[in-house]
Length: 286
Image 1 (cartoon, rainbow, N blue to C red):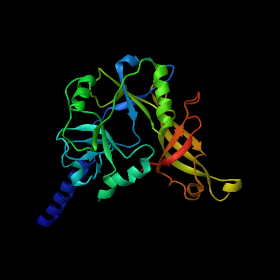
Image 2 (cartoon, helix red, strand yellow):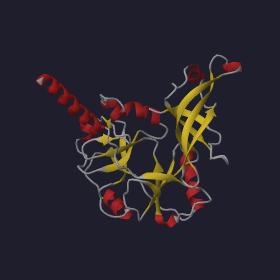
Image 3 (tube, rainbow, N blue to C red):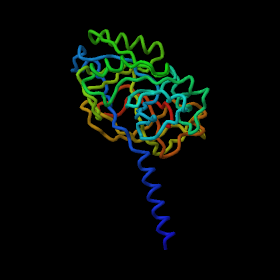
Image 4 (cartoon, rainbow, N blue to C red):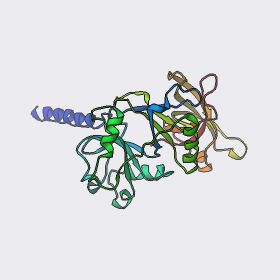
């Protein structure tokens, strides 16, 4: 009897630990910049590069993903990190997302791989004050390892200058730009306090089924039927089912993403029905 109770208590204890490990951090989330139709005052915003890395919340002891899972960094990497929270991105360099993802998701980190990784800090969640004050506090962070870096922030005068900078950054393989309202408090929600600007949009979708290929793709996957939740121009969520038939390599057509898995796709704006325009497969979401 006592052994049975012990087993039950052990199960409850283990379940509690597991539940605690997957608590998602409360992060500030970005809206999408609407070029030519945006009502924001650009004079209020700081601009920075949008890094093609993985969002990582430093809670003072470890890196936590948006989904609440730990990134297992080597002990030497985080040994001299601050004891207070930071919001940032683990980054390897422009166009290196896939390689970075493979590095930081390993349960047993490899030192030689992590020596190439940097942590780009762009906010301090628990620092009191508006973003202007938090930015000053970040710029005053000294004495930390060289792989802890503060994201560069600058100003623009108008939308033309912003779009020209976007084109320049993208031409050099950057993912895009971020805009952060100077007066914003750190709040765990999606709003215009934080805005992302990219030359193309990306979104996650769930794979529902396959369409058989034709012609040179006979015997392979020709397209995917997917389901995605898309934000319209009023930031309302709408569920859409549609096909994605481009962007795949021959190997991906021979071994398509599993039904039920999540993929990321690119698209260029929305149709009048709110569906993604020119949807193109990018990668399987890890």
